[in-house]
Length: 358
Length: 192
Image 1 (cartoon, rainbow over the protein chains, first blue to last red):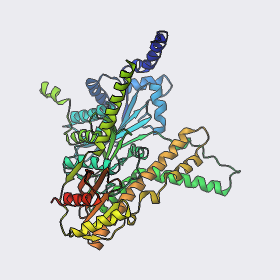
Image 2 (spheres, rainbow over the protein chains, first blue to last red; image 1 turned 60 degrees about the vertical axis):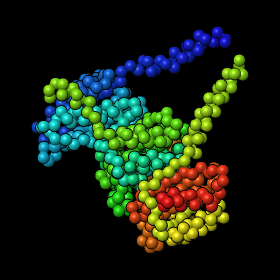
Image 3 (cartoon, each protein chain N blue to C red; image 1 turned 120 degrees about the horizontal axis):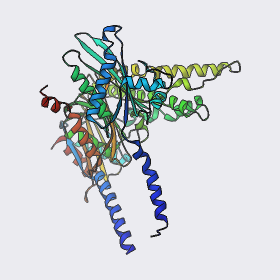
Image 4 (cartoon, each protein chain N blue to C red; image 1 turned 135 degrees about the vertical axis):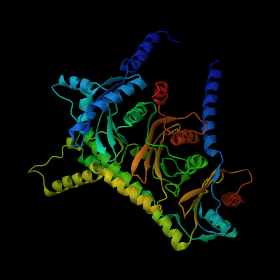
C-alpha cells in the first residue's frame, strides 16, 4: 500500500463525514394552530396545542423544539412576526430564517358534538417537502389523546423510514396496486398480498406490460388529496410569463392556456382526484377499498408506498425508505408492508400514562 | 495470493447475482378461487402466433367456452399517452436557468399524468364489465409464453368481482413444451 495517500484519504473521509456530525439534533419549530372558527373563546388553542405537541415530541425523541413564542422571538430579529397562515411559497425562506429542520403549523375548526378538526402542515427544509394531515377528535374528554395521536404521527413522519398511517388497513381489503413491476415480477408482488388474504383487483394486473417504469412511478411519490397530502414546494408565481406590446395574439393565447392548465391540474388538483376516486369506485361496483402505489428501486431492495382510501377519497398511508435483505426482495418488502398495514397503531404514551395512573 | 482474492470477490458477486436471478425464476402460485370448468373465458396470450393457437385449442379441449378476444381490444396506455409531449410544454414555459419554474410546470403535468392513469384504469374496468355483460365471459386469463423455455406466467381475473384469483410463474422443466405448459396452467387454475 502507498502510505503517502493515507493522510489524504483520512482528510477526505473526515470532510465527507463532517456535515452529518455537525448537523446535531434536529430542530423542529412550531408555529400557531390558527383558529378558523371566528370565535375568540377558542384563541387559547392557537398556542396551547402547538406547545403541547412540542413537549410530547420532545419526550419521544431527542430533538430540539421551538415553541411559538420562541419562534416569534427568533423572527423578531428579522423584523418579522409569526403569522397564523403561510403560503407554501413563504415556507423555504421562513425555515431558513429559523434554521429549523422542520416547521410545523396549521389550523383548527371546532365541529359539532364538541369535536375538533386539526389540519397540520409539516415543512421539511432539507427536501423542500410539505406533508399535511388532518385529525379529528373530541375536545373535552380526549384532548390529551388528540395531542398524543398527533405527536405520534409527527414522530413517525420524522422517523427513518418515514411513515404515516391514519388507520389500519385490514386483511381482506380489496386493493388496486400500481407499481413499476411487470410480468413475472409483478406476480411475485400480487402473490405476497394474496397470501396475506388481501384481494388484489384488476388494476394494472390485467395488463401484460405496464407503461409505468422505474422513472414514471416516481410521479406517484407525491400525492395530494382533499385532507392529506405529501408534496414538494412549488410556486408558479415565480415563473416569469412575460408579456407586453411586443407579444402577439399567439403568445397571449399560449399564456392563457398555460395558466388554465395550471389552475385546473395544480391549484385545484385535489378536486380532480376526489372526482376520479368517485368514478373509480363506481367503475368497480363499489368493490375497491384502497388504491396503492408502490415504487421499487432498480435493485428491488428498497421501496416506498402511498395508499388512498378510494371511498373516503383521502390518502391514508405512506412509507418512504422501506428496505429488505430478503432473498426475494419483492416478497420481503411486501411482507414488511403487510405486517405494518394490518398492525394496530401503537400509542407510545400509553405505558407512561398507566404508570402515572392516568 | 492476488488471484485467490479476485476469485473470492468474483464468487461473492456471482452468488449475489445467482440469488437475485433465482428469485425471479422461482415458481410462484396462488389460487384464491378455482376457474370453474365449462365457464366462459377470454384468453389473452403474449407469444408467437403458433403458440397462441396451441393455447386456444388446449382451452377449448378442456371444455371452456373460449371467446375470441385480442389484447388490442383493450387499449394500451402507450397508445394514448406520451409523457414527452408534457416535457415539451414544460420547457416552453420555463425560462433559461430558472429551474424552479420548470419544476412547477413539470409537477402540473405529473398531475395530468396521474389523472390519466386513474382514467385509464377506470376505462379498463368499464371495458371488462362490458365484456362480462355482452359476451358472457366469466374470467379473463392472461398467459405469457414468450420465454416459455425459461419462465412462463399467467393470471386469471374473475370479471364479476374484478378480483385476481390465480397467479403463477412457471419455470420450464426438462421435458416441457408449449402444450405441456398450457396444460399445466389449465390444471393449476382449475385446481384439478
